[in-house]
Image 1 (cartoon, helix red, strand yellow):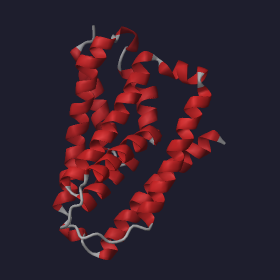
Image 2 (cartoon, rainbow, N blue to C red):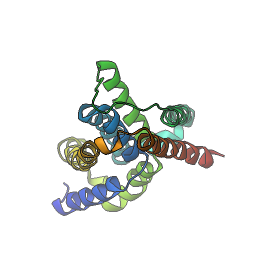
Image 3 (tube, rainbow, N blue to C red):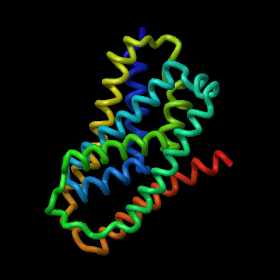
Length: 207
């Protein structure tokens, strides 16, 4: 049985952590500006799914499994690094987009969601929150699968939807002011640095 005070503490901690700008938020803002509201929410879905994975890791103690099958997790980790570097390269050399044009095909929305998912799995802030901070906020030994599914996952989704919506709608509101080539270049290169920084932070921990 989980106490509502514990759920509230978790929701507040998650909201604060999610609201602090990092690689995920930077990419979410850039995607919302270039692709519009739908593309922004597609990426947010991917970000949330990544958080679901980490929360499940924390609840079920899968860090132990990760140690036992370290080669598989190493492969996933290095794939994530490669993908982050690819995203960094794409953002750095991205051309100016007409912010009034939306090209949200099924493929681009899927890629936006995949990017969000990968960014979360590679985000040191997410790793630290779920595998270090969450065990301090919640008594994970008392959390069953039913509590995870019926309480923690919906709370996680709700908090991240609220925080993500603030950034998405904020980005949409300033799209016109970022229509110039110089403004978009600054935004894209900020996103590129954030993606590259997340990738190199993982590399630094592995060396």
